[in-house]
Structures are given as C-alpha cells and as structure tokens.
Amino acid sequence: MFMGTFTNKVDSKGRVSVPAEFRARLDEEGSAGIICYPSFTDQCLEGGGPRLFDNLQDMIEQMDPYDPLRDAFEVSIIADCQRFLFDTEGRITLTQKLVKHADIDDCITFVGRGDKFQMWNLTCYEDYRYKARQLARENRGLLLRHRPIPKRDREEWNE
Amino acid sequence: MFMGTFTNKVDSKGRVSVPAEFRARLDEEGSAGIICYPSFTDQCLEGGGPRLFDNLQDMIEQMDPYDPLRDAFEVSIIADCQRFLFDTEGRITLTQKLVKHADIDDCITFVGRGDKFQMWNLTCYEDYRYKARQLARENRGLLLRHRPIPKRDREEWNE
DNA sequence: ATCCCGTATGGGATGCTATGGGATAGCATG
DNA sequence: CATGCTATCCCATAGCATCCCATACGGGAT
Picture 1 (cartoon, rainbow over the protein chains, first blue to last red):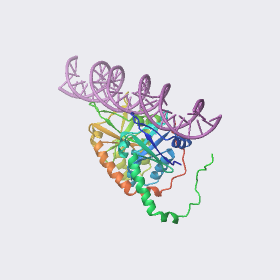
Picture 2 (cartoon, each protein chain N blue to C red):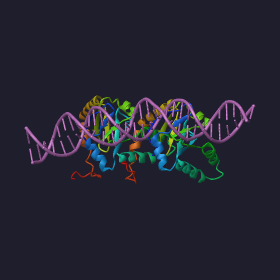
Picture 3 (spheres, rainbow over the protein chains, first blue to last red):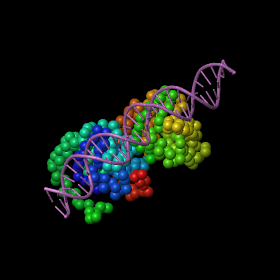
Picture 4 (cartoon, rainbow over the protein chains, first blue to last red):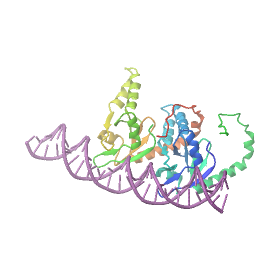
C-alpha cells in the first residue's frame, strides 16, 4: 500500500531518492527497483513494483492479439515503460523522455495511490490536488451512497 | 521481456547498436544475435530471439498445409526472416531490403513489445505512438475491466 | 542536552554503453 | 592477378550510470 506524499530533490546528476516508505513496500514485494510509465490522462508518471506491472500485462494478454486496441495498450504501456533499479542509496535516475512528460525540474513529488504511486512536478501536483479536492467537496454526497466493500485481500496493519 | 524504447544511430557503415537491455534479454535466451522480419501491418521491423522464431514457426506448422493463409504467412515471415549476429560491440547491420521496408535513415528506434521488439524510423514511430496513445486513452476503461490474474511465477527484480 | 541512527543529498572515481574509424580478411569482378 | 567492395575485428573515446564514501539533518531514546 503506497500512501502519503513526499517531495524529494533531483540532484545534478539527475538522481532522486525514492521515499524510504515506498522502498520498504517494494522490498516486501521482492523488488529492488520500480517500474515507471507516463500516465495516460495526467501530466505525471505512474510507478510501482513488479506486481503492478504483471497486472497490467495480464490485462493486456487477455485481449485478442489482433485487436488494434491491444496494440494501443501495448505501445502505451509496455513500450513506454522503464525499469529502474535503486542505486546503493535507494535512488533512481529517470530518462529524459519521462522527465519531459511530467515536466519535472529540480524536485519530484511522490504521491501514494494504493497499489501504485505517482510522480509529479510539485506545482503541477498542487494544481491537480486543488481541483480534485474541489470536485470531491462538490460531490461529497456521492461518497456516502457507496456501501463499504465487504473485505478484500486487504493487508494487515499489525506487523 | 522487452520493454522501453531506445533510439540509436546508424553509422556510416550501416551498423546500429542493439540496446544493452535487449541484448541482456537475448543473452538469457542464449542468443548472440536477433531474428528480424518485416511487420505485415506496420512500416516497421519485428525482432526477437530464437524463441520468438520457434513460436512463429509452430503457429504456422499448426495450420492446414493447404490453407492459402499458411502460404501467406510462410512467405511473409519465414521467407523474409533474417538472422543477425552481434559484432564484438553488440551491433548489427541490417540488409537493404529491411531498411527499405521500415524507411530507416540515420536512426533506429527500438520499441519493446513484450516477447518481441520493433524497429522503427523515429518519426514514423512518433506518429504511430501518438495515435496509439490517443486510442488507449479513449478506451482506457476497457483495460480496467479485465480482472488482474492472482499472481504468476514472476521474475525477481533484484540481481 | 547529547547520542544514535536512518534518510536524503552531494560528489569523486570507476565501469559500461554507444559511437566512430582504422585495419584486416573474404569475396566478387574486371 | 589486381582492384574494389563489404563485413568483420579491434581500438579509442565521450558521455552517462553506478559504486562508494562523506555530510547534513531530524526524530527518538537516553
């Protein structure tokens, strides 16, 4: 479970520390790195561990091999996906392409989103967050209509 | 797993470096080169290791020997298939025919597609990618509808 | 307050990747 | 046989990625 938001600096070599909490979560999954791809819908990157990527891949593999939509997803996810291993200090260095997509400069804001996390330019994120909160406030009534989900394979919190 | 995209230069002798990540993946398969054939559907080349080629061949062999479609596949894939060994620096040099099919000039963009990869002229690929992303974005809901499969024998990511 | 430890950050040193070009060997052609 | 072409091999190099070590900072415990 990725949660919380952290903003870390990008150094002169382009390295950035992945928040320790996220690294711990990835370590549980047996991963010494992240996978990362540009979001379809927003000016940010999405990242996670191998589990996230396997899920995406499985979803793609269930589609008809000749469906042009499958091609579209393959290109948009697999082709734009990058794997980054942590250096000995838990940092990664993104590629130019990804940096460009998210308009990242000297800081990256890591935002936990449950099974994945996002990486934003700080000011872009603040803007996004403001709009999201506003929308949520206007529609808060809808939240109550949803019944709580019985229980899924939810992680236990006592370790 | 071939993923990510890399664009490398074609030098004056026609050589191009295969991305190191792809070479590593091929090396696991025990291959010191690639198999390459023109895509039927797009203006690009498709490549992979011997395993990919075996799969293609099996698929064709399962077809009825008198099915005209079998002939078509055989001619389109097997006949135009070519094997390239890496030189000591991990480069290959394509044949004129293949270069022509993909309209390659001074750069080649290698695009990971899971079990295989593609080789494109950069501007052709950008165009293709743009359209694919657009299609994927419009239909992103479809991807989410597929349930993730519980879990498979997944490769570990710490080496 | 002081100590201790983990996290984030910075920078030198080193190794690897992509790239370029000279040299050599094979092959075809006149 | 001489000549040109091509495919290799081999070496050199620039740029980048990664390792390793040092430092700064903050929180918790003593």
